[in-house]
Length: 407
Image (cartoon, rainbow, N blue to C red):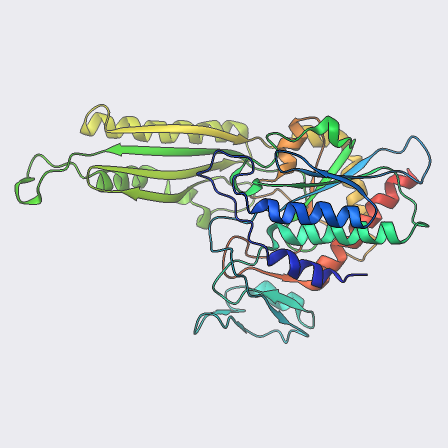
């Protein structure tokens, strides 16, 4: 029986970064390396599984708990964020963590410092897996993948364990907002599902941001700097001016809880033309729409000041807040709460300050809240995950399955 740590380390060794510039599905062919591996491992455990043309792995375990039991699914995404290097990952394993700063040996002087990340001390005495400081770790969401596979391994090796219909799903491209655009909910066959894609132990979420992406394009006018007076329009500076019009207090570093934000995530440009990329987030639909209007108003101001056609914006919808789709099925939240309490975990029901495949799935007819996978500091080189949190998450999956079987 493979230990969850060994399984996790095998999965993070596979480079699966998604590519937001690609139009293919999956966006990067290398995601299929892990997806094929997962399909083969499911089949090797005796689970009926398939990998379809769009990169979705679906596994099915029939009920041994009689009829009339809802089919429950567990879903995780295989891709890692394009925000930080994701290849040649060198995890370090800190056993019996002493509660002090953790050096990241790949970069001289770099460390996970308790001063910066005080929650580290919550895991004193546990085993912590970190990066070496040169890449992300990939716990988002390979921790979730490992937890689901660990639970499946238990179910298949313990035929006495009673369960209803179980559905397993692994998806690509969640990190670029396209994780389930072609996911066949009917084919998946679950009545309810859970994404194992949350953060710290105990997190349980059925609210998420409404989300949009915005691309602002600035058309400048490049004149030789020696003769530029009264003629040059520097697209970089105009774009910076537009960015300064957005409310500073609504940046991610100044917000929490239900507060939304504008987040500039990319810039590419020259004097002649420049592109600024944003994500826009808010839990409240009215405030979300207002934010989209604000960025359009900023573009209009720039055009009034510098001339029509100087600035343009494209706003693309990404996903909606799933609360209204999940709340009518609140018993699935109650089962997750009970499943955590059975492991001595205090549930933390809170809004996701991000997104999840579960949001779009909920609007596709599959109510799908989100459960902790255990990781911290996702999308960057300070990412880490406590081993015990992953072990607990796997047990929570089994507890949920049991609770559905009991009715």
